[in-house]
Amino acid sequence: NDSNMPRNLHNAAELFLRAGMVDAARNVKEATSKLLDMYASDPDGKTNVNVGRACVCWSCGHCGVPKGNNNNKNSISDDVRKVPPGPCSKCGEKDQINWIKVYNPTENEIKNKKKNKKKKEELPWIEAPELSEEEKKKKEEAQLAAKRKEVEEQVKRALAERV
Image (cartoon, rainbow, N blue to C red; front, side):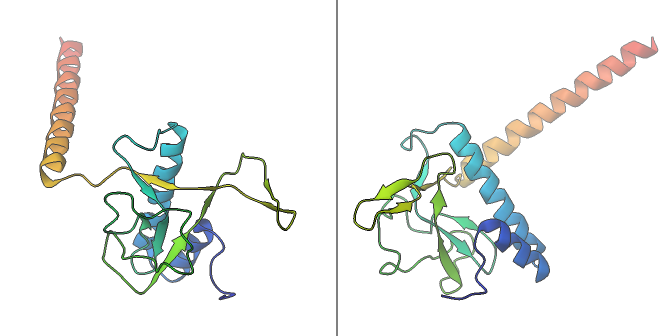
């Protein structure tokens, strides 16, 4: 147990900023926002998502299901002391990686029957899978076409106002 280890991803982003690692802090923020948006959309956990225990990479700040988890083989029920985290699915880092635990903040705490202690419900990390190169290209083309259409409409309105 390292007393300097951030307690949560907000503290991790602060640490990255103090260390001058702005891109890493941005990666933590973006990954966390995507996770919260995913949970807000009430996912079923089966349709076009990667589900499992996530890692935080201390090299690039990426948070997400580790590389090689394409068939959701890592589970939140796995003992994190026995299963090593990583590698990072963004930069491939294998050493500077830690597991992330996501807890349900709205769920009532669950009583642990053995020790009569209260325990929070742990949730899996849910993320959209990486797009293939072809899918990225199609998405980019669709965004460009939409932007082009928007600009053309603005030009038409501006011309109509001048007449």
